[in-house]
Length: 412
Ligand code: ADE
Image (cartoon, rainbow, N blue to C red; front, side):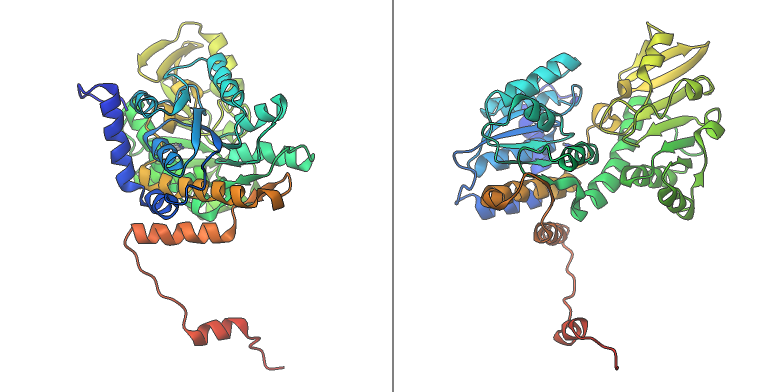
């Protein structure tokens, strides 16, 4: 957190941790349930996550369940300095610093792997990939947080190259429906406002990609009065965007019309020379996907070697005499320009992580070296805990309804 208080970093980090903890009731509930049993005792757990206040809640919970934790960052620019100091003060081994270059960031992932962990929890699968390259030795299993990470693991799984079982946490309903959609929707707006403080109503936003992240961002922007155009290559998603009421178009059609472009496709170079050259003077471009590959950064950097850093996380490039404002260096805007998702929604995602870790520890001997979905009962448990946390009660089906559901109700 940027924090304007004059508290020292560790005290600020402790306040931020406690602030998040209060809203992450699912994690507290799981911790209370398992704390006495210490199911993670004797295990070295590697985590490669954005080092945020929400992550500190997961890390401290895993420690309370008995785990030895070794942590590094899932992005060179997403480390919150107060949390970093707070975790170190709590004797968590952290290989990270606040602003790393690409090399330092990758070196830190390797340092964590060199400790030969028993289990890996990753965000983006860079650690999983390095582990496969370097040799997995002790690893009994792992988990993965994101769509982008799961895409990478799916390739390995199809080629039968996975060396340990991995649970794809991203694909739980209680993860992507809420975190990817509402979490990223809201935190991307936060990233836009913190970096630019622009006025959103009436602005012409072009959203590239209509997966769960694209849906969340589009809907939040529309709620704030923006005009939203969606660009999609998938015909079903494009149709969905159209029926959700957005303008659906081709990037060539709108490259010179957008005030603000946001990529969230998981694909490479979706914004490139032929689009950037035609953009309006003063345009904003940002990425909301996990990797900084969606905007052709090489092209932008070649055009202007000395961009003006007009504000934190806003680099103004002069391209053919026009100003192109690149936000958060093309890295994931909500975590680099903002603070990431709010604790309430990370409670669901990290609740899935924690229960999936416990599942692997209990079941890894029966599992193959495959990519697994989050077990249904974990997904349902997280939904129940979330409803409880929000104070929402729901009905149960009657016995008659359960019987009706289980009968064949057709008179033959
Ligand atoms: N991914 C998105 N938001 C996050 C957060 N607040 N903490 C950790 N990972 C995140």
